[in-house]
Length: 395
Length: 191
Image (cartoon, each protein chain N blue to C red):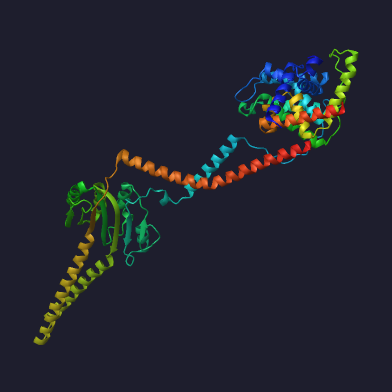
């Protein structure tokens, strides 16, 4: 069928319907228009009575028809589960809600250490107490993980967290009545042009905390090769505050603390000294009561030997006391990027957080999208089936 | 409302002369009343053409306006005109009624329209012509009858019919052209 002829036919018909009369001059078109008007004239007309009833219902706001109010209402179709097609905004809203719920569930189910921001420059705090001499409760205090010999604490970018961990008494092995050999290894990163300043800062920190800079070496000026190492001895009770100040000097890349409980050894050495002194006193009494020269000489030899033992025991005792009175801090200084603070750091954290949220949202979408697609396909199929079912009445 | 006004539904001419008020969303109560007054005879004619039973046609027509009134806020102008929306409801209701009743009863004979001033000579020709047209219409399939009813009883434009049927306007034009040709051939054959 030529589209031109088709179009002409439709226009001819529309003209007749619009004018309510035959308007064409050509016989074939007149015939079409006459047919169109005749078909329209065959349209059923509502009865006057029905039109009046409808007017009343219109005036009343179309109340629901009551059974028996006029002609018996046709039997209502059996109630079935209707597959109503939700509107697009409802579907979109539902999908968004699903994404939010899945994302929320992901965030809530995520372990705490995963929610912390992590990157390559994140400081690491490790606490490794000596397991053999720690009491179990102290081991738990020290590791925070039920008595494990060593545990790695989750990385965190917050220096406050490091300060907090360092300052917490239970985070370190040993208490005031115990003798613990403590040490810490810190890796600090600073820009090449700040290495010198940071090195001087380390010495100042040692002074402020009544510590001693045991060794130091610092290389500057060679791009990419700058850095140094330092070893400090600070009084044990100054260790947390010293670490806190060190963390202010540069970016903390890692922080490892260790504790070796030497209380038993310290007590044993003290007991040894006491026993040896008691022995010495006994020998001196025996010497006074010696009857022969040979006996006298033998006791004197024993007294000399005992005195040597006492000296050795006292040195050992003193050594343990000194080792537990000071903590050793090994500092490695490396070249790193400019440390961000203030608004820059906040912006950086914000971007990281946004990345994490996006990551979660993408994962949630990975779940919601296939479900949404399935729902959309089901929705479309339901619509097509219902339409076909309806139109089957025309077949 | 006169019987003439009921009989002559206007269709395309009315649609051209009085465009339905278009709102971005929903149909206001006063707009609904004007929509009702403009479309009631045509909706009835369309429904009756499909269900072919006067009582059923009245019930369905009442249902259509009741549903449309209740759902008037769900109308979206982006999905078509008020009339296309209303006839969509009417079509669904009529098809549901057809499926439910499975009726194939011929519509009762329409009473003679007294308002048509015809001469005794014309009456014989008119009766013959109507009989011919009815016979031709009876030979149409359900889908063709639906299309003819939307066009001639409903007075919808091809674009509105396309909206109601969920197809393209060109498809409607093609199908309409074929159906009219079929009717024309049937009329010529029986004449």
